Image 1 (cartoon, rainbow, N blue to C red):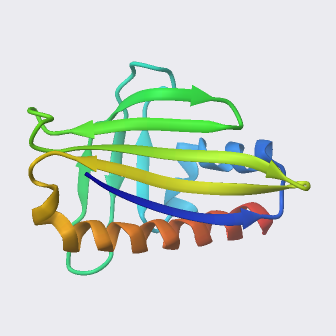
Image 2: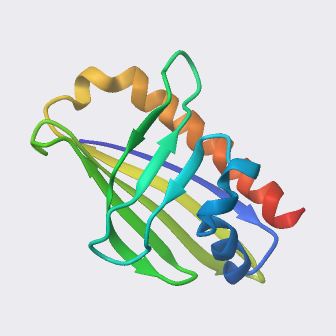
Amino acid sequence: MRVIRTETEIDAPPAAVWAVLTDFAAYPKWNPFITEASGTLAVGEILSVHMVPGGDRKPETFTPEVRSVREHTELVWLGALRWSWLFSAEHRFTLSEVGGATRFVQSEVFLGILVPLLRTTIDQTERDFRTMNAALKERVEG
């Protein structure tokens, strides 16, 4: 198992951050990491998420299952290979109010026997999270 976690403080209430985070149609305008996303934000629904990672990794589209949607608070999806014991990744966005601002946390838990072989990829993913967090902050505050 490996966990990555990034956070940023955004000078806006959670409702404003949530509105930008869940507006998938606008992702191409501001999100450098997840450049396209579509689907219904409801538990059990399948999303389509197109990522453009940094480094030398190629863009990819995956279809995670929505695990949790708590408006203005949390969005969780699970991406996995056909056999999750090989590899799965639970991606979590959490928003919490901090003195009128929002603490935005983006994290992922990687499980499966392939995780040790993906160290470089996971390290790049953590950098991509930071890049997305900064872009989200700029979009919301701008």
